[in-house]
Image 1 (cartoon, rainbow, N blue to C red):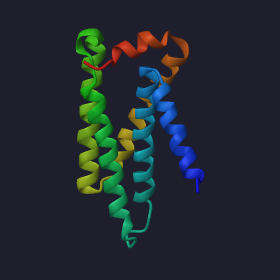
Image 2: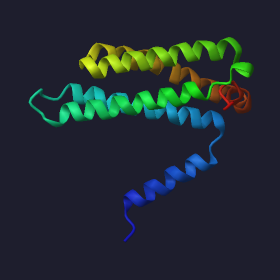
Image 3: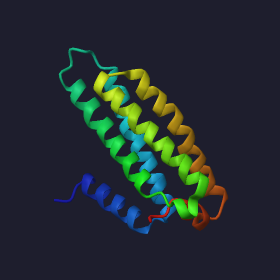
Image 4: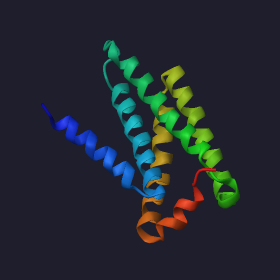
Length: 142
């Protein structure tokens, strides 16, 4: 029997296969935001909740993996100073999320969430207002 989860999976797969490179980057940005939000809400659970630490760990590792992937796809030749800046930002986000996870430091997570949301929103606005191909070339795979 085909259920709602199957339809959602097919829709996501279709969206990924038909997305432009710039839209794929935005999807990764949204994935990082979603994982950080789930970790954020897990921090708010009672400390007696045994799943709290597991959820925080899992979601922060997911967000870190996304930032590692984004950092790895930067094209320094085409991106120049922009690529260098984004590499430093991604490295900082990864470092702070590791600290948040190891020390269960909510403030470190909140900082990355706030800073990265600005980057995500700026990227989304750029996609809306500029040529998608120009934006995508900045972060095209090597």
